[in-house]
Amino acid sequence: MGQEHTPAIEVEDLHKSFGSQTVLNGVNLKIECGETLTVLGPSGTGKSVLLKLIIGLQKPDAGSIKVNGKEITQLTREKLNQVRKEIGFLFQSAALYDSLSVEENVAFPLRQHTQLSDTERTEQVRTLLTSVGIEGGFEKLPAQISGGMRKRVGLARALALAPKILLYDEPTAGLDPVTSSKINELILRLQNERKMSSIVVTHDVHSARTVSDRLAFLHEGSIKAEGSAEELERSDNELIFQFFQLGH
Amino acid sequence: MAIDEAGQETKAVTHPFLEWFGELGVFIGQLMHDAFTPPFEGREFVRQLDEIGSKSFPLVVLAGAALGVVMSLQMRDSLIRFGAKSLLPAVIVISIIKESGPIITALVVSGRVGAGIGAELGSMKVTEQIDALEASAVSPYKLLGATRVFACILMLPLLTVAADFSGILMGWVANTLVEPISIRLFVERGFERLTFSDLLPATLKTTVFGLIIGVVGCFQGMRTSGGTQGVGRSATSSVVFASLFVILADVLLVRLILTFFP
Image (cartoon, rainbow over all chains, first blue to last red; front, side, top):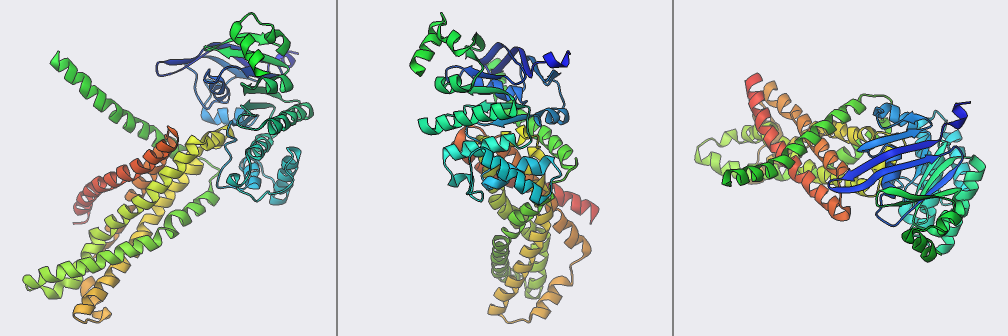
């Protein structure tokens, strides 16, 4: 009973500074299982930092982060790695390993963390790549493919270990509107198929509307508003109002 | 007031210096911990043996050959002045094996490999590839760091042997062009005064040079920040620090070798 109500991710009073610059100043968030939350906000407000804190790439100065009920801020690297296997991360730049081919990039987490045979692994990689809309060019290097393709490969790699949680860092940044739309559709389809809990960080209002169950607006280090796109659009906060108006 | 200002200035200079060494210590500790935690990265290690060893081989052999020729030309004149021309093969062989070969190899490798590691890992850092490894629950210290450091440790002595060989061979060639001498006689004269304590410690000390080159390159690369400029800075600082520490370590190691292998 209690297990059913454990949020997928729970962030409480999170603080993070870099030198004298305070980036997060008391962030509180809760993402239920199977829910997709989009964190919106202007550039440079610490949205990406928030994701990196959730996956343990950076340490918070204060506050609590619970993933599936487990506090991760005090975990050893070995235990944190166990938690990380349940989380997929799509980086803003896709962060594909540039010395590995498309296929090898997706195979990498499987090679590291599973005992699959070469044949089984290849089969699984092809299935993953097909599921994100890549039908060929598996042997190409990341430098030889387009930005949209890189995001798709990054997404396939993030899905390789069948994570329960997926974190998207600016999934449509730097893409043309048509490719952005396709990536949004892909995210939506994957969420429906896999029932993952997700956090999408973006400043693309259209993308946020398309993929989210709920939105949160991050500004000046804290969450200024939470709710549906319609609720945020009617916000009294002028910045949020403008953000939505100009983002149309 | 002046003392206070001087104190502040000293602190401003020493603080980053001490911080750098502190971070280096933590990095080495983490790297060693992860290096000996299974599963091991055999595939990547073999790739690095090729990258660091095989691909440095031509450069090291060329540097050794140039060293042999230069030593033969320089020493010949000096020894003739002292009436000790017959000692030329021994001087070439002993000086190459005991000092010139190891240090030239280490400096050439620190230039090629140190810069390569610093730039490669630096580029991976600024493009978030190292973050992606960590997010995939893979230790970059093990996959990227340990494999490169241990490949450097293993390859430096082998490359040194190659540099020594080409140096001695080209020393003979340079000598023979001026005054013909058979290779057999050159080798006999060269090695007759050479002992175990000349050969082995001098070659094996390069494992320490390999450790320095690998650790400094990986450390500088993995702490890169500031985009492409940062990558350039990491590559440069890897070579500068690795070369400097190799030379300083050589002073200590020569002293130790002379103590334990008199």
